[in-house]
Length: 88
Image 1 (cartoon, rainbow, N blue to C red):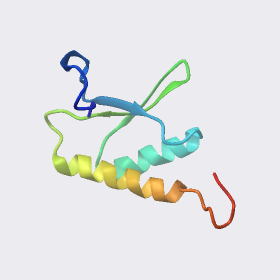
Image 2 (cartoon, helix red, strand yellow):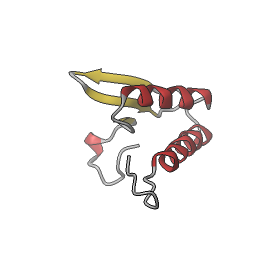
Image 3 (cartoon, rainbow, N blue to C red):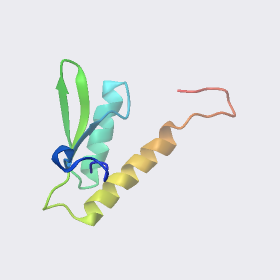
Image 4 (tube, rainbow, N blue to C red):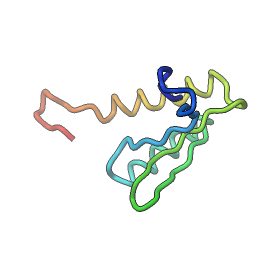
């Protein structure tokens, strides 16, 4: 999951990211990802962190595809509505 051009010693299959600033929305997203059969965790230290994804030997391409599908769906859901002038 690390950028392919990262030096070999800096590569990792662990990624932590935030999709929402609102913790309730972040927890809702985690539950939706779990409902799709992909298990992620929420990790925070000193209010820094987010959803933790750790791809490894036991994960399949289908697992990654399901995660990507949920994140695409969330991206479309939170996309700004430029027609109304409301940008969330």
